[in-house]
Amino acid sequence: MTPTSGPSTPNPAAPDSTGQTPPAAHGLAPRRRLNPLLILALALIALARPLTNIVADQAGTDLGPLVPLGWTLLISLVWIAVVGLTGTARPVLTLVLAALAYAVFAIILSGILSPILLGRLEGPLANPLAIVPLLATNAVWGLLTGALALAVQRLRGLREQR
Image 1 (cartoon, helix red, strand yellow):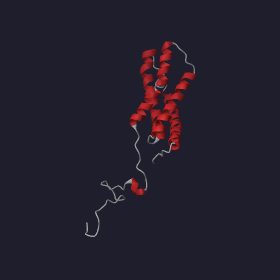
Image 2 (tube, helix red, strand yellow):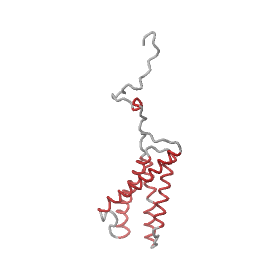
Image 3 (cartoon, one colour):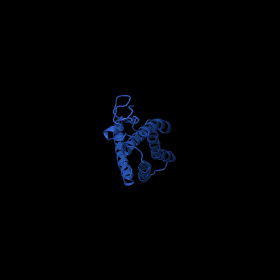
Image 4 (cartoon, helix red, strand yellow):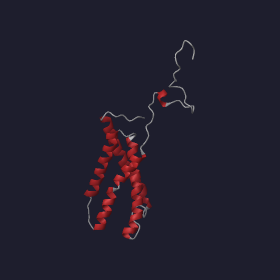
């Protein structure tokens, strides 16, 4: 410090200790991180759908197509509300990952429970060609719900930081 200058203030555009220039120096907002616990929780919530089908099958009850469709709609609304109303970072990616995690959990659940309950392996693991379409379908589900959650965030005045 010289006698005529004031105290030294750090230069926000100066490289940090790693030699990298902070994103804010480039006019970019720092990227917010994904919440893995939220992704896991949303995926586990979605397991209500296959668990309902398993219980109904064991009880000898035919739920028809409306109950699984209703579960899908309810789960979608919960996902959109939780992510859209809380300002969750990167809502589209969050819900795509939640949907993919749900698909993986459902595959594992099917692989564990079908031999126990049915005496034979059924589901995607019994027909591995079904795994890719199952993952793709769930990724699209996550993409759609994520886009709607992002729209909710924007309508509420929340902006996704990039």
